[in-house]
Length: 355
Image (cartoon, rainbow, N blue to C red; front, side, top):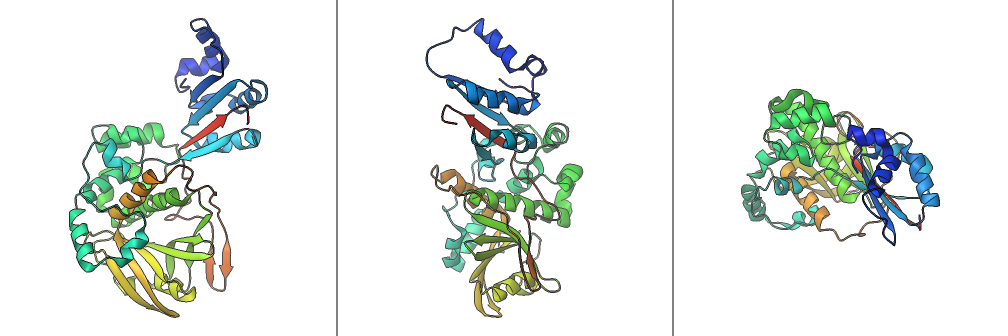
């Protein structure tokens, strides 16, 4: 049952079930209910709580596309249901749903492996991946929703976003995307923010079940790093430099500073040009480090590809958000661009006899 339909919304779950029983005889064994867009129902949490407590033979799966499903259900659902958070389409999935054949690219299940590539490998793969650039820009403009990916034009997709989906929590949709349309591609600053947000969504989706903290870093004057992952106390910096010019060491003061201050061995720079794809050795204050420059379309494609390949249950721990302060260096919250973004558009709550 999908409760974004006005008649079903007015009838309610019990009313729909009574009508259903007039046409279908109750079979033996457990009963399974699949309820979509349940956030449109009044007091849905109370109804579900009573079902779990008193209807032990009933199994219910609830899906929703708005933030209230995740926030409102926490209080009454503790110990009663399990939440599965689903991200929007990754850039790896986007060409598939559009039925566009991607270029022949090697399988890369960890960006770390790229640090061992030769210059010839970077050059050949970067050249082969050029068709991804146009698809990536269209992906940014359409957002990560399947319906938006399948409509005939970007204009219709953006109309759908503004009118029907703007209240949802897709981190790849920023105000600049919705307001500027295709003009975003001519706005270097706005496009950079959209890429930074989309890349973070891919990184977060890749690691959200692992106990990893995400933050940003600010050091001295003009020293910032967009995204810092904390993996068991080991920091991994990501800097987004989505612009026409190739990235030079002098453009990475923040990344070099955090590598020196924390004695880091590697970091990642997300670039624009497919030719801006290489390993950049740097001299940090405490020693040598290597920065991998990888074009954003390839980084998002490979991160999304790994997520599709990951075996079920591979990662189990939840992501934590941490606050850390040390001298002039501050890491706080989860920041993307200049705003905080919720990341998930769908939550699934599963009810069973075991709770």
